[in-house]
Image (cartoon, rainbow, N blue to C red; front, side, top):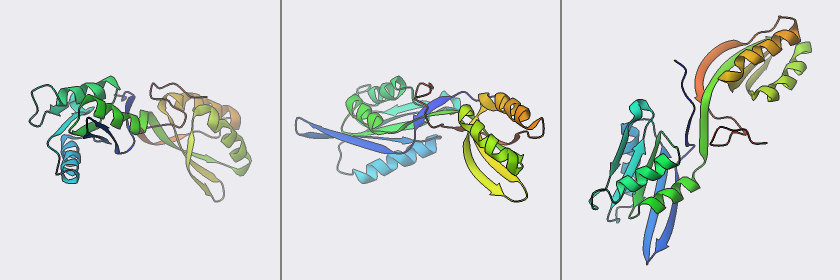
Amino acid sequence: MAQAAYTTVAAPAAAEFVEKRSRFIGQIAPVSTPEEAAEFMGGVRAQHREASHHCYAYVLRQGGLQRFSDDGEPSGTAGRPILEVVRREGLVDAAGGLTRAYAQGAKCAVDAARVLRMRPAVVVGVDADYAQYGKITHLLPGFGAAVLDTRFTQGVRLTLLLPRERLDAFARALGELSAGAVAPLILEEKMAPFDGDSPDGTRRT
């Protein structure tokens, strides 16, 4: 079954602010399993051993798993607000941890992170001759295709990444361009971000 598009963060990020002489630190990271979330929070605790509380929340695609911890704060006052921020931002496979802060710190961390819109994608191989190569490269931007590798031998072998929903149209365009001589060969199906995508899945101009 085809996977659905989703939004996550590209890499760990952190932000902090000071309020009433207290330092609030929010951190966020991409994770895909409870073990990765625990490892992330272990790193946060090691980095900020002096903190009174290390509250966190995470949301995973696998099984729709959601967890949070108040870490000694009154029940529902810390971990749940963090979880609500992550959910409100539409993020999955993401863990947010805070040192001494809650919703505002979580939002600061999300704002500091690079958000990725992950979409179903395919890696394809395209074999062409040198006369076709230039024409094919001119096709690529119109299909949101990214060149992963190009090999020049007796012919040209292109390895491309493109959105899964563009594959059929791309195959038709290749066929028309080459009189049926060139067709994409699917090498891998995966989830991937694409340049120009905004977090809501629309294309930036």
